[in-house]
Length: 120
Ligand SMILES: [Zn+2]
Image (cartoon, rainbow, N blue to C red):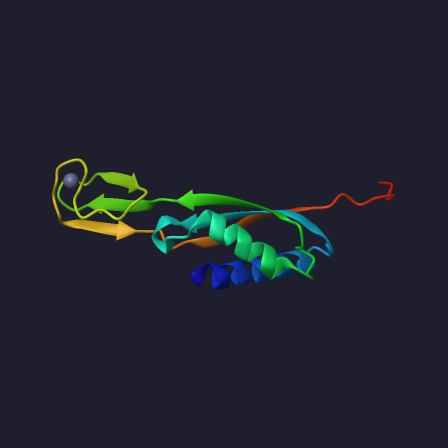
């Protein structure tokens, strides 16, 4: 299942990020996934739970944001964002289009546990 490899990548990115900030407990993670990756959020959540087990990510809340595909029309010059792959410009119907994005896999932020008993 391809959600598992995505979940593992997310974990690796987040753990690296956490280490860079000397964080040893991650409570939440916010990711951006391009719609072209055709991720099933529920499967990804399950895969993430399994991948996070035994790591500093265990029990972290996964927040998933979809990144739409951007379509640029070469005929009318307009842009459109879509949650699905399009074959035509939504403005003029031209098929002379360029498709960008939708393949993103980004960790946009991580939430970490508040330090307990630490005065600032
Ligand atoms: Zn057009």
